[in-house]
Length: 359
Picture 1 (tube, helix red, strand yellow):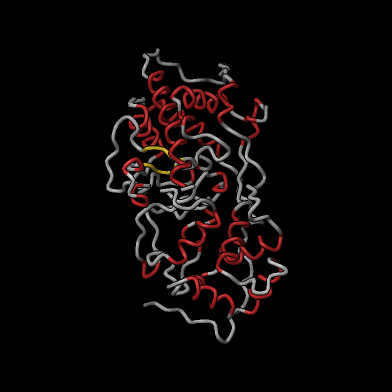
Picture 2 (cartoon, one colour):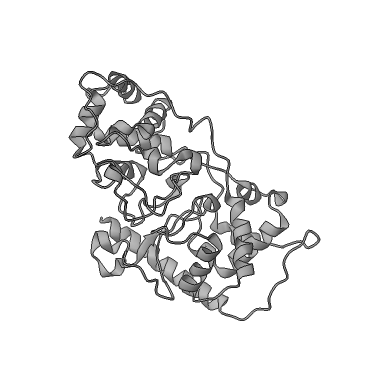
């Protein structure tokens, strides 16, 4: 079955639900006074069923997580030798000490070329239904293969060159043997991607909101609860849901067209129904991962909130409401797993390891 045929029902459900939320949101309502310490905000916990407490890791039966795979994947994630000129690694664009982003609209790669889309965070990405802004990769393992061979990003000419490079590093050969025991030739491009995927599946950042979802009413401040109530009243959970609070596919400009040259998933499938379909970004750590949107064009998060209300629901919300929602969004900021993301010592190059190639 084609991936696109699986995805379209998800889009249809989201679009239908979004239209319902828009109809409800369009009803005039009296402006609510800002919450104070003396005012208790009441949240209908039934509405919280749209979310899920973040797991400790995102499992995939096709790629069981082991300590050996994670150790190998961590090294590969930080290794610039996986790029043609040996100056770009996964961490270059998805800096784990900066909540998995580089803070730039689009990221520089080989020969400082700029990519066409903003580099999204890798934290909690295991909770996404699909990977990349256009959903062209079904999982983290397939996603890991893309940037290495992309001529604008890491620019390796082919998978064979990558495998040749890794095999020239004695320490990696040993690590692959440990991570994939019993395989006659464990150093493969697929296994390289599996190791990186295993490492990324444990890049999770539980936040105060997870404690709140689990029943701790004191995990959020009253101001954060007020922002959450506005978030729910607007219907934002229509798209931003699940453990990653995002990660499905949705049309950008569901009600009011969004002007952009990038047509999203249509660029991959050339199917008219996929025009302007993008993967919904996770809202976890969103206050730390700007600039926002697929092109990194929005520098202020309240502006992003107002634009989403306009384009997805056809509604103009006030500056105060947008700021209140951002207060809630800050409760989605988790603590970085410092020991887990510490840069490891990389194995030394061998005599046959290729030299940097700036061409």
